[in-house]
Length: 509
Picture 1: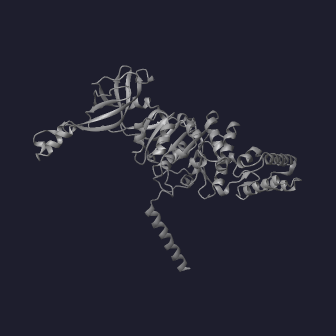
Picture 2: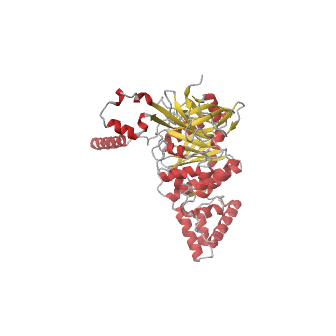
Picture 3: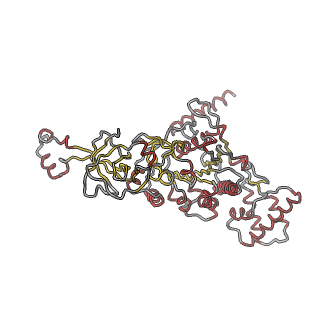
């Protein structure tokens, strides 16, 4: 039996194809719940955008003022409390016909039609939920697990957008758990996470708490200080991307050096690093300003202590299907070095997929607006080009990308527009809300207004994963907490306790 929630009423602007009002007869009608109304073509599904409390007595302000001035208790003469009722405003989403065909509502429902809480089976079909998909949380009204199909969510990329403290990292952890828990027959993807703050290192740590699940056997953490980019085999174009300020003459000179060192390698000289490239330039007969400036550029790269003769780690050793690789950049301060690391991994992964030498992958980029800003020179956005390439072409090759940002207005619109699914948590900044409204298909002003009122741990997903907006509560995660998930007072206590322990050790010594 369907749970009756109300009856459609006739107002100045409803019922229409875009708005339906109904008087609530059910005891619990909530903003954000999904309702169902009988329709000529099947079942019309709608989302409650707002709930309004009305009272006929208090509609006429002049009457209220005059009566209240008499100092007479209104309840003795008028049953004003019994005149109170709830009116819900519904946005029609679409129609699920009897033969499971999805369509827009082209005609309004009739006044007097009964409104029901949406049937979970019908709602699941309507929202394209998948019983074998990734479990991210649940819809509260009606109670329904939110499971999204892996292909619909990942293949055309997605973005997680929220202000600081709204639960981005928590939701990301839930997604990682779902990917790591998948079985071989379900299809497993390799996941690479660019961790700018060290929030996900707990995945690679052995978990001794029985209340949490241990993912350390499926996770590998690589600290930025252990990464070496092998110069051997890198194309001149790779260095041109890292050094966008090179002149045509400098590019020509660098290409000749790389060509010579590659030929020497084939003849038995072995792999080479930046030091060998610099040495070749120093031995060159050309001693002009072009040569000296090029040497300075390469020496600046060498100062990052990021380049070697061979890749460490090898990309083939670092990633695997059904496994998580965390690139920990939390100790890196230099922004350009972080850009180079992301560019290196993204470049290797994408062209590895084209050659089918690496498994299908998901590249998750934390603080994406720092790596692919909308307004920045090439020198300060080295990774932007390769990220845009993956966003445009990656779905053809099994290369997916997830962008996580707390400032979507600063993120490259080219990349954001290619992320066909947006998972949005609480955002209150009006510029970010406006930007999301312009870049997310299927979001109306009412839905945008609901974003700013979301509680921590609540999210809205819109786009390819589900053809209609889905408001849901993120499920409880199974993995252990990050060492950063501590409140301020707890950090203060632990700092002072560590100082006391150190003092005691020094005194005893």
